[in-house]
Length: 82
Image (cartoon, rainbow, N blue to C red; front, side, top):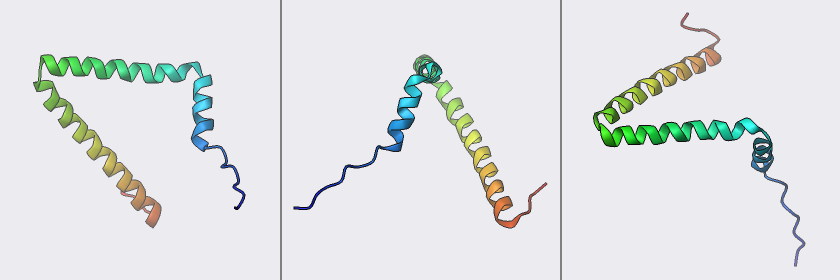
């Protein structure tokens, strides 16, 4: 049988360990969790909110995609739309 070598430590393990040591890391997960719960309750109470949230999400995603496309074009050609 061949001898196996141990796997190196996963890079995510070091990242997670560093996150656990920072006190602000838990807060950065706690706040979005509360926001999602509140949004879920609001959607149950008033379902029309869901349409507005989805529409807003589509607009934000479209703006981000245009920004990324502009950055890629600027990087490839060295020119911009300015």
